[in-house]
Image 1 (cartoon, chains in turn blue, brown):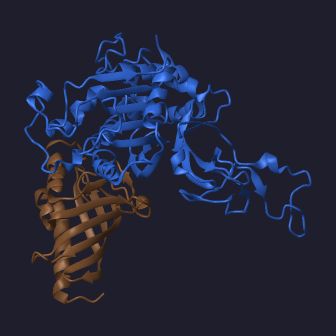
Image 2 (image 1 turned 135 degrees about the vertical axis):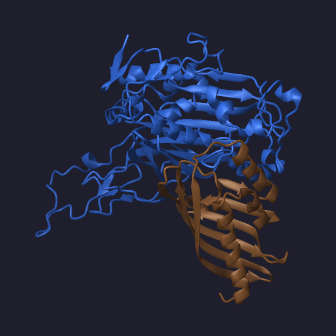
Image 3 (image 1 turned 90 degrees about the vertical axis):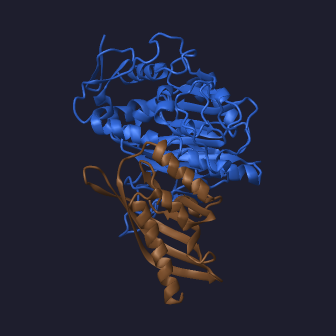
Length: 410
Length: 158
């Protein structure tokens, strides 16, 4: 059975074949903006810890649409499109800050912290200055608002009033993953950004693909911090839009031995000259040292040892997206714990010792698929009909994602 | 500020040598330009004015720099390229005994295997250079990138 997405044909619908055009087509990109980023899905936009006080704001994106995430006087969080209702100019030009109002510099239209229009210059006619008609309705000219939901301080927004509740959208394993990482008040430590010249869905796949982990990322194996006998776990929603996966591990500062790595062939005999990089204390008592929660379409929430971050996927074009990392710790971290997190930031992000390869893998694909758009990626690693919660190493989660994607795009 | 010409020239030579070692792929020698407990950080400009100043690359010992180099050599996969570090605007900001605070601008280009060159990163170095061991060495080198939206990834140090 085949079906179409925009003008892209899927030779099979089970997710085992992905036509390359799906990563390159402008039509597909435009339809994604409409069906996915403006559809009945929830988009991550920011953490509440980034805008703790009334008047705090930061600019963000829903798909490629610029938005402002703002905290109002009553503490409520509002998300509105960062585009003046008058002429379409960017209203808030700062990346973040605190303000009483959001004022467009072009003609001084002024909005409050909820995105409502509160003043326009020369509203009343005073010839020769024009003015607006007496029935000009200020309430009809606010900034376009999104619906907002927050789970433990993780802010999501949607354009679609028909979206299910955030809890229905995420379902249990994802909610549990968020609740676990955000069980305590968080403190944002900073941001990292990388501009990857590849299609955003290549990253969505990457974060659902355990097959590549030990094969592409060589750091753990090379330095003996890898544990081949680590038990994995995997969870997902019923629609399989999302994926929550991870690994249990022992003390990650302990050097690898034959006992802890088993028959692993990748072990090089190297160890770190300065092992302080791996010194940290577990944040949780559940023995999980790797948790990658990939929430479609816009965010990956991660714990890798003591590194905690959200990775916001911001599509810019069919062949370009920004990966925006918000790196955090907990408000009650002591100085030593914060120092460990700052040092372990070496492991993740654009210069991450265990993660820098992902950006390169995405670009390697994008560079090679410029032609032959009807040709397909081949995704049959791991039994195609295996129990997804049992097959924690195969490509099942990637195939499931593509089935879900076809369902909303076709 | 005014410093003796031989001091300034020694500082310049250190800055240029730093660039040359990286551009000539002599990464193993790169840590030798630092003191044993030297600090090297790459800090996105958007984090620079906030606390803490989160770095995307952070070494606080020569050993840690060597680990980074060994990881690049044996473990990491990154875009194959030739880097070119251009160091300019070298200025001594302050002195404390045999220690000098030095600011400089950097521009780093990357040339791929097709011979295409792209601007990769622009920013400034804020260095603490010590002459305590006779030869000047970095006690601290902060690379603060204006280009805080890293094109793809950062492998070779800035």
